[in-house]
Image (cartoon, rainbow, N blue to C red):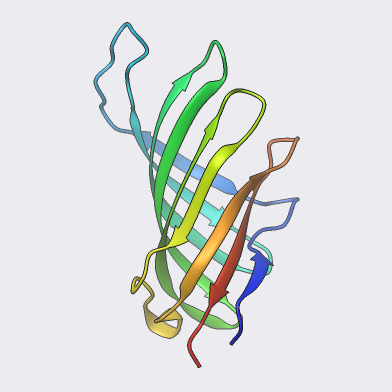
Length: 141
C-alpha cells in the first residue's frame, strides 16, 4: 500500500485527553526542570484509537518558550486494520511558532495487522488549540 498523509482526528474531536498523571520530577528555582507526565489520549476520525503517552517538557511560562518530547503507544484501527505501534514526537516553540518538529513511527513497533507499519507524521496545533495527528505511513503488502 503506498504511503499517504491521513488525518487521524477530526477538528471537532481531534485529541481528547482523558487523564493525566504527573510523575515526580526535580524542581529548581532557575527554570531548569523537565517534569514528566503520563497521559491517555483518544483519537477519532479516519483513524480511531487511543494512546498511552509519556511526555516531558522544558517550558518557560513567562515567555512561552520551550521544547517537549513524547513517546506514545498507539492502539489503532487504520484502513480497517487493527494493531498497535509506537511513535515519538518533539517540537520547540519560541512562543509564537513551532520549530524543528520531529515525528516518527518507531521501526518494527507494529503489532497485529499493523505489523510492519513505517512512516512519519505531524502533530498539528490549530489556532483554537485543537490538536490533529496526521500520519504519512506505509503498510506492507
